[in-house]
Image (cartoon, rainbow, N blue to C red; front, side):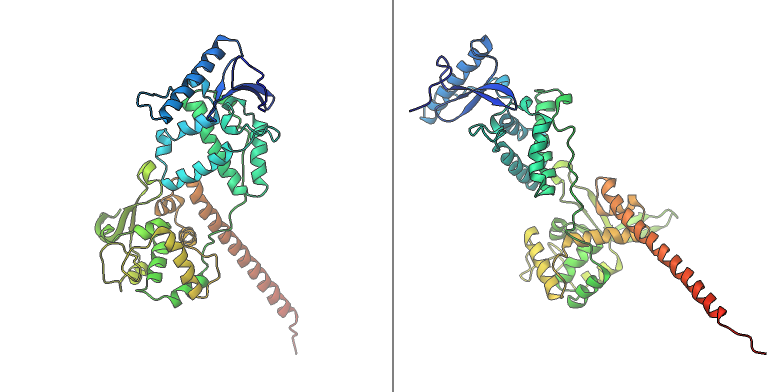
Length: 404
């Protein structure tokens, strides 16, 4: 027997309390929920309730195949929930400028959040149904901390995903004031990742000894390292993007250089991708010299076909195993190696940023700081060695005796 309604004059309406605040919700027979603003008996409440009923009737008629049926859109004030914010987010130009991988990942995180219950003891209410202005900082913090306990990086990504919904509520729809943003006081600082480590010289030499120039393995390795390119750019790089260019030097001389000129795949939908111009260094030229079929992509499978981005990750793991290299060294690790290599060659941060196609100097500064640390510790070791050599020399001199 169904539970009697607390509001018999408003069938389907129930009262919910979330985070100490009460709101009213109408649940239609097809399971669709609508938040009803105001208080029962008020003009605002009655108007919203009648609109919800009309919408349900139109929705039912449309489902039954009535060609004249038209679903009525609810007023904005009736749909200021996180669920509505998620729908509105996907309509914004900012969302559409993300690449498909970013959209898919954030959509997954947002859906996970929307399906979570704000209160453990309230089973039939999820964040999807809750008005955005009901969320307080302490509730968002509790949700993020629950994830941070086991998945620190995921907690940061989840916070960023929820902030996208709050951005819709604040900047796009103006549902809440900026100063009422519950995420303002929350910061997630995951530890530095140990994935994709840089390749030490000994590891690089093992790979080069096993995979000779002309092989797909060596070509992939050379492109990833000497271009400092990401996996997707290595897979899609074409011979048509290699050409000779005239460059006027600061001395006034004209130099002819062979260089790859292309746009990075990252942020291609958002900004068009960073425009790259990378002259061929001698080591890369040597690796590409044995390749005869200079059409299509530079890197090809044994069947002459391009590698897909995902298959290239697995294939690099196979090549590393063949060379006797421990698991964990990746193509992105080669990109990091190139950044460290440039920093250790005393290339300025701006130059490294240009070479790697970074959009923010903060990322590039990591390579510079690491190189400076190595140089500082090397200088310290040199100083210690010189001091100890002097000490040993003084001891030897103290043991000398003059014989008359």
